[in-house]
Image (cartoon, rainbow, N blue to C red; front, side, top):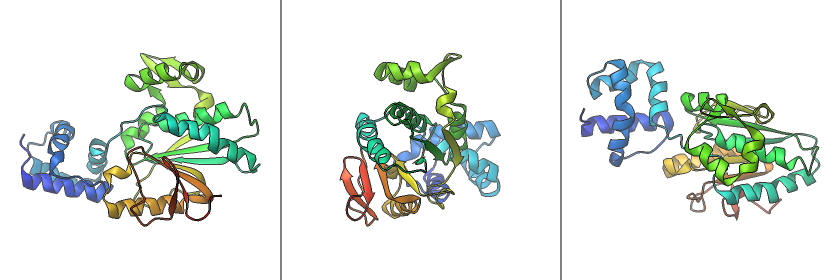
Length: 272
């Protein structure tokens, strides 16, 4: 079914309206591939009719968002980030001797691999700091991705990479489940998942010590990047750190953050 320019423009506008993600005409093939299964499932014979459906059916808007958002993630993505977490951030936090638990927000958590990787890293560090307590919130705009995250069951590329790169952690924290694996209860008990739009208000119970906002800003234009970063700042405690993806930089933007090292930003001012 051909996606005409006017229908493409309407869909791009709807993506922006409901997610804030900035797409252009080069996403024609992507949108066709992701949305045609929805049209077939609904028995809708034209793009115009589907666009009309989105204007009147909030339930379908949820499916639309699930279809057009990217949910590609793996366990322990970008080794340098996890080395910094284990060797720099966690020791510095533990040294403060706080009574409150470490609070981490995995924003745009997709199917949950990052949030569970955080939990595993914190559990490993407890061998050096037995008093460390922590809680992790993973959020995403996609209900389908969150369903996978809450189930904690995985197979395929993400699992294969994890087993190859970190075999000891793989055996320690994952258990066999069907033709794949499942996150063990000792990991899952530290993680919860909620639906959240990064352009909306920060999650309740803010004052996070660490915010992971990786590989998501690249999907927003500069205006919405500023909005997302302002929301992240509002959710952070005074000495918190923000971690971005390897292809992302915010130095050209007017934000509350200052560069600390590759991938890592602190709240502006002197390092704390």
